[in-house]
Length: 92
Image (tube, rainbow, N blue to C red; front, side, top):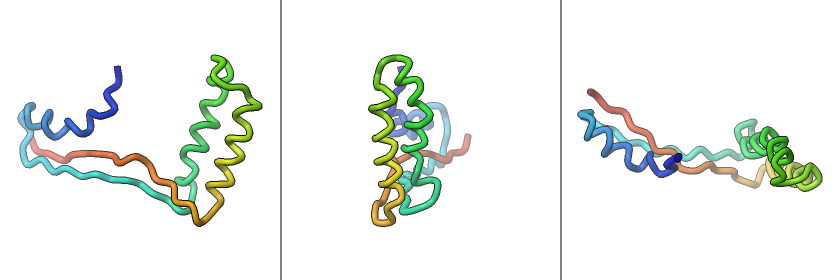
């Protein structure tokens, strides 16, 4: 039931709800180094036990993925970017 595209509709919904002076901003975080660059690696490490529990993947399948992700994160030439994140500021 999650609408992953809701951010694109957010300005129109805010206007329908009576907000005014709507300011739209899109942010796309990108990292060449630092802990933030490890987001996807950390997420997989956190969700791995659930994958194993529900038979989505085995520990032996996940371990090399985490190693590859760690190696990619350590490479200063690789840029890791997240999806573009829409947001608004408005007055009511």
